[in-house]
Every structure is written in structure tokens, then in C-alpha cells.
Image (tube, rainbow, N blue to C red; front, side, top):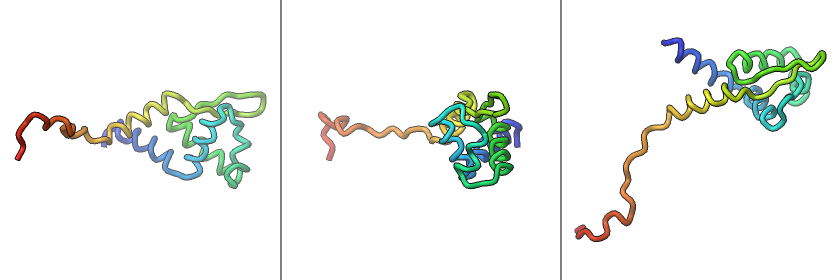
Length: 109
């Protein structure tokens, strides 16, 4: 497996956990969310929330900013673009399907 495929798999794996996907949705809706908010939000212990955030950060999906003693999380646009590209690459090429009007004027029997 190439290092590119491994990195892409790691990024998708980071999104594959329900808590991490929920964290991403929460951060997208409310950027600059404090790490301390996620434990209560998802009903997990603080170390568990921190581990999920680390996985998302290591995958390049979130960025952090320190605000005093708090660490705030936002969606990293570059990581999100990469996730979109990976998923878009899974889309098969569109098949050419003639429009309904394409047969007009031809005698099709």
C-alpha cells in the first residue's frame, strides 16, 4: 500500500467513528469549540473526548487554537477538501445516457 493510500485511509477512518463524526458536525456548526465541551456533548469521559480530538487532529481534519488555558477546535478547510477529494474519487465516471429528445427526428422502430 502506498503512503498516500495509507494517509487517505487514516483520514476516512478518523471520520468513521460516530463520536468523531459528531464532533466534526458540532465543530462545523460552531467553530472555535472548546475541547472541554465535547465530553458532555457526547456523554464520554474527558480523556476519551481528548483522544477522539487527537485522532481528528492527526488526520488533518481539525485545527486548534489556544485561548488561555482552553484549546479550541475548528474544521481545517484543507483536511475537509482532502476528504471531499477522496470521496469524489470513488464516484464512477458518468455513463452517457442520451436525453429523451435525442431520438427525435430519427425513425426508431
